[in-house]
Length: 248
Image (cartoon, one colour):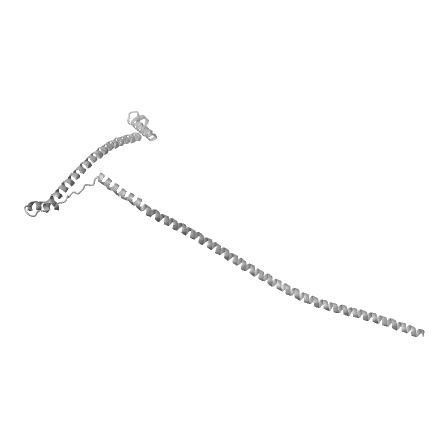
């Protein structure tokens, strides 16, 4: 509807442009364009009418050709019957047999005229064959597609499983690396602990030796103290004896 309204407005303005009033409303170029469009519309309308008449005439001609081809086919079938009839003669029909042989040798030089109806029938036959193949061959195609789909799904599943295995392998490798690293750290810590234990053992032995030496020193000090006390006691007794001797 909008297109029809637009065409109507264009036709109206073109009609106005071709009148004397259009000289005042439109330029010379617009008027020339409107005149050319009007001529083209008239020519297109005439061509469409000629095309319709030619199409009708073509249909009538095709119908006539089809009737003629049917008549030719019927006459040729009758001729073939006569040919088969005279081909079995042995005596008294030599002329007829010769004529039948001549007729059998003749061929239609024009052949079958290719009409639109003939082409349509061929196209319909081909389309039927295509549909038949699609209907009967569709099962095989569907089975093939189903197998391909299943194969793709299996391939996808295998790829996913392979990716999971690769990830698991990487995780195990990382875990092994960490375990190895922890083992090395534990070995270093154990070595350090052993060294500490050895140092502690040496320190304990040195402590024992030092304690023994200290004990010996204390014993020596005690012996020296006792000796000093005994020396003092001896000196005191000696002095006491000297005093007693003096008094005596």
